[in-house]
Length: 245
Image (cartoon, rainbow, N blue to C red; front, top):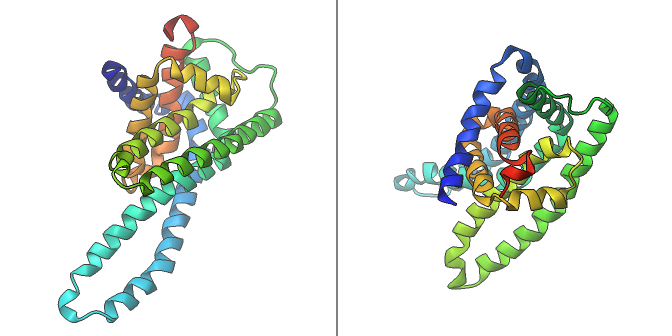
């Protein structure tokens, strides 16, 4: 398990070398721009809404407590990171889903030399990608509710941070693996079954994506990087059923 976790995390780095390839680079531009625009808007809108509130709080405090301002902003940043991770990231993936699916297709074709979706039109790819992303929202909501209940129970909630990290890692693996698997018409249920055969790989990859998602500025390029990395992992670790054992 630990070896698979380490191995899974390495695929994110391999994704970086893939997206630099001239024949893949053009498929990276659109999801990258969408990610920058969406993340940029959320950051700008959040600052516009929260800045007056923070200033109002600081004016009501004595001057010797001025140091609390950076603590307040730190707390807000942490809360926004959590909210963005569990709500905005899935929404951003819905918007960019068609472009990510095409990028995953082209990367797999580059790695295998095989035509992946020769008979599938662009509109079909767009429809299937968006429907798949929407379907995962119910799964996310259900498990998030369960974890919130655990977090609210005294004593048991001591393990809730670990559970949230594991869930977040698993969720991101599912989120991004959907692109190469969806190109092979695997349903969400089938995708979960495939990933369960090598849970360590999924958790290692998803955990690495989670870390980068929480880093300002770096999170702008996470989406195309993760799509490329997960496609490499799909081809090398999951595509052939014999390698899943």
